[in-house]
Length: 439
Image (cartoon, rainbow, N blue to C red; front, side):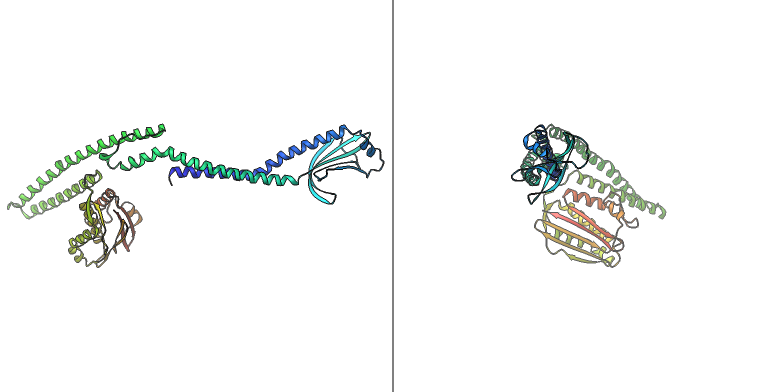
C-alpha cells in the first residue's frame, strides 16, 4: 500500500475512533449538562418557594393540624411538580439531595429529577419536593447523538477527500523521484539529474542527495569497468602464456611420464582458473549493464538449441526429456545472455538428476507474460541450500564438477532482464525452477 493511501486510511480510522468514543460519551456528557441545568432550576424554585413561605396559600396549609395533608402544585403537562408535607420524624435541618425516581402523577407515570429538602418552619419539620420530568432528556440525547454522528460523518468525508488531494499534491515530488530516478539507479549512464520541482525542502534535499549519490555511483561504475578491463588483460594474458609454455613442454621428448602428468594437471588447473575468471568477468559486466538489451528472442528456439547441445549428456545418463513448450514466446533482451541463463539451468537439471531421471519443460503464456518451469527428478535441496543457491561459489554438492558460479550468473542475467526466478525443491524428489519472462 502506498504511503498516501496509508495516511488517508489512518486519518479515517482516527476520525472513526473519535466518533465511536463520542457515541458512548455523548449521552453521559449531555445528561451531566442537562442535570446541572435542571438542578440549578430546581434550586432556584426551592429558594423562591422558601422565600415566599409566608404567603396565604402556604399558610393555609401550614396552619392545618392534619399531618397527612400535602400542598401540591403540578404543571399542566406534568413536566414539573412541587410538594410540601410535614415530616413524620426528625430530620437533619436544611438538608437537601437529588434523586431520579419514577412518579405517578394523575394516573401518568414518568421519570423525574427530584429535590428533597428538609427544613423547619415555626418549630415544625417539613419536607419539600420539587421534581422535573426527565422523559425529554432521552429524546434530546438521542437527537443530539444522531445529529452529531451525521455531522461527523460529513466532516470525515470532506476531510478525507481534502486529505487525499492534499497528500497526493504533497507526495507528487516523492513519486516523481521514485519513477524518474530511483527506478533507474541500476542505469547510471541514463540517470536523469534534472532537479525535481518540490514545495517541501525534505524532498528537495532528498533529490539533491540522490543526484550526488548517483554521481559517486557512476564514478565507481566507470572505475569498476576500467578495473575489469585491466583484470582481463593482466590475469588472462599470463594464464594464456603459461598454458602455451606448458603445452610446448609436452612436446619435449626428454620429459618422463611423471612430468607429463604434472604438466597435464597444471593445464587443467589453468583451464579451471581461466573459466572462473571469465565467469566472474561475465557477472561483473552483466551487473554493470555492459550488454545490449534490444534483441528479439524466441524462447522456444533457444530451448530447442540447448537441448540439441546436451544430447550427449542426456544419452549418457539416459534422461528422459519431456518438452511441453509448444507455444512460442517472443520478447526483447540479450540473446546470448538468455541462452547462457537457460543453458545453466538445464545443465544443472541434467547434472544433479538421477540416472534414468526425467526433466520436464513446460510453459504458460498469458498476454505479455510467460512462465517457464524446469523440473528435474534429482537429489533436491534443503531449505538452507535453497537460501544460498544463487550466491557466488555456492554448490549443492562438492562431488559434482563446477565452480559454484552457474546460478550466480543466472541470477545476474535475470536481474539484468527483470526476469523473476523462484525455486521449489524437496530432498530426493527433485527441484523446479520457475522463470517469469515479460515483453
